[in-house]
Image: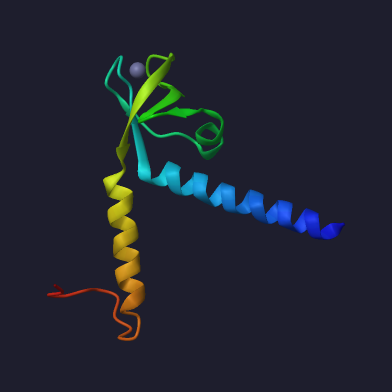
Length: 100
Ligand SMILES: [Zn+2]
């Protein structure tokens, strides 16, 4: 029986990771006031997404809106940077100079 418990936990962990990735890489834009905001993972999980719109609560006008979804380019760049650093770890250098 405990096998099911382990699978259940594993599934929850995987879903949590996916939701976390989404929160890291998505920025939402309120159609009412135009402000950009991010969601906490728990909010990301509970608010539904319809087509390319996310039902979410705008922190500025405090209304439930159909927010537009944008890529959080800053975080994506950050991840790219860490991946590049990892692949170059053989050299053991921290700063990159003249790297193309
Ligand atoms: Zn708003």
